[in-house]
Length: 233
Image 1 (tube, helix red, strand yellow):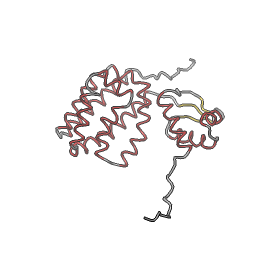
Image 2 (cartoon, one colour):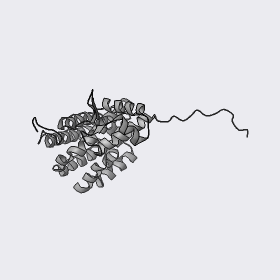
Image 3 (spheres, one colour):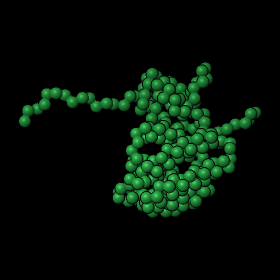
């Protein structure tokens, strides 16, 4: 068999700026770079072994996503995480999920049902397991991902990709407030899964609405952020 002489098209490689932005985003979300941390072109270029041009591009990307703030003459710092950000991210994400939940429930496959049952019986089996799953973001793929994958709406997925990182970051900062209602939260999620497995989309969405209200109530207990400073402090 003759060897093909036509070369295959080159495999696309991520831009250096995108790679730097992704690494910085993960460091900000995890708290390795806490709010207020200064970020300089020189320091980041040395840290990542890159020139200053892709570093600036990366910071511009993170600024557009709300992870950093750049002030002329003062430089760039990691943005604060306020309770309002958590509230807004939850409301948007749950609106997206309500749509996916309603549309996907009648379409769930046998394999989807198995994934949801495993989630109900493992991640949501007890409070400790659920909290550990949330801290490691396991439940996002094991639970939410089933409905988003089955709905398969590309525009919705693009919006979700923009909201999810901010929600993850806010949860790490304010997750302690949610732990007080973790048991009730997991009970509602189990009800949601059971309803969707019965094919009852209305009951599943109603459970989601109760869960959203529960989380927002827990978040409203304290309206000041750990990073907030009052005037004169």
